[in-house]
Image 1 (cartoon, one colour):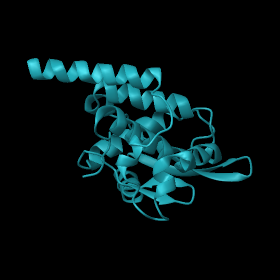
Image 2 (image 1 turned 90 degrees about the vertical axis):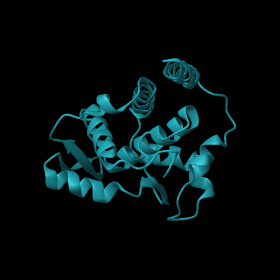
Image 3 (image 1 turned 135 degrees about the vertical axis):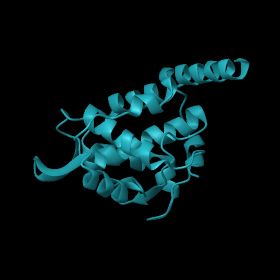
Image 4 (image 1 turned 180 degrees about the vertical axis):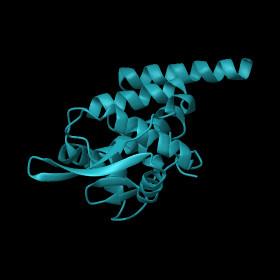
Length: 185
């Protein structure tokens, strides 16, 4: 269990499809950015909601956190015809891009709070390229405390020197209200 949730490969696949679809017109979107979107969404969800969205385990790599389960999942998705992986040029760099070949069912799998949080991360990182999202992830306490190729503990999300954003506060309130309704129902 990572981030308070068992890893669910199907849920992870749907997240990848959703992010790739939402990013299909982003010329800065590639594998590095996909990894960071997942990382920030999972760690923000753990902080705000008490569990990650995917249950993925993140490893500290040179260019930032990477889900340990990513390569095997992408291979499965490619073999199943859910995605294709293509290379394209972005300035002097070669991007490895995940192209969705089917619609994602992520909407059926996420709570409203998880969906809002994921969309906020996509929006926050929208204008950043791979180098910028990598640099941003290197500022994260979790990446800084882990050694090379070591698991980044989800609990590191609690280490901060900033106040929560308005979006984070709204998501927490929605989650608390949703949990209260569930208990009362």
